[in-house]
Length: 228
Image (cartoon, rainbow, N blue to C red; front, side, top):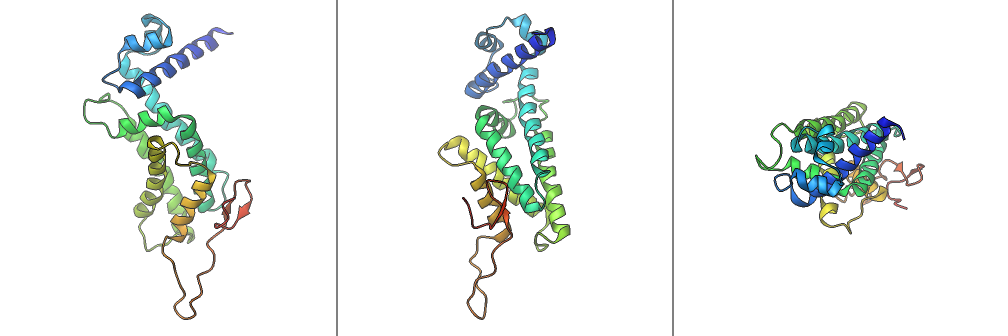
């Protein structure tokens, strides 16, 4: 293994150990000694990569937001309509959340922490806002194209879908039995685009036409009512 590869592995190992301690004990309740004991490295080795506990904590929070942002961009590129892009984003972020539960817990805890519970110079809010702005930009495209209802403002629509995304992840952290998968993503996007009200035609009692078609789990187009 090259020297650079060894350094990269050691840094990653320290981050993984720190993540488990921070997730269990919180920022204030975690010490450098706990982290080095968990990682099986010396304090000088840890300080080679991170200046202090705050620097280590921020690296983890940034990782959570940066990886999520990258996933969102890549997922959006695979969809054609805004509905498809949102479904792909949700599906990708859900998969990431399931694989990185402790990282998600840490990111949410940081976002809602009281003053003093996390590092003062943490950029969690800035990173979170960047991710929200990306979703907002897609909603803006949907409004401009006529795919979304102009009766609602850009911010109302962006908060509506982004709130659903984060709420489902938070609920899954608390209740692991709640599913986070493509089917869930399809249902959320369908609810967002089609609404929850049972709309009946005024004169003949016929229902409105089916909602726009969304991708199914195999990447093909399927009616929004098909969740297989």
